[in-house]
Length: 94
Image (tube, rainbow, N blue to C red; front, side):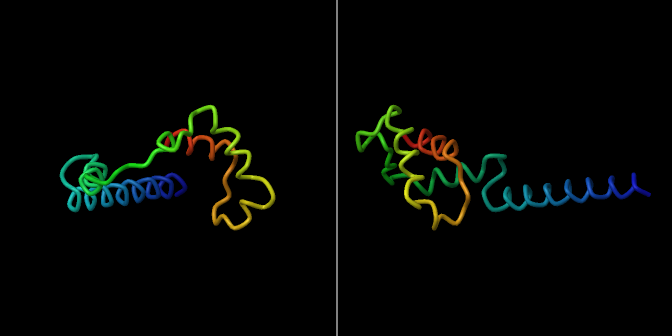
């Protein structure tokens, strides 16, 4: 019985995953990266702002992340996030 239950849970997850992938393909095209391609099309012609366009470089990321956690600045953030996660996010938008 336990094996059957475990198998059914796994099968349910696969079915849900396949259904979502099929829905995404129907909406965004027949490729696995259809959503990414669609977003690229939507953003075409829109200037992508990067931190570097404001003179912020990799050497500035850690101090900025540290400042994000001073004096309750994260108190109203709806998601708990670590300093390492902030650094990763900022590094991705240099």
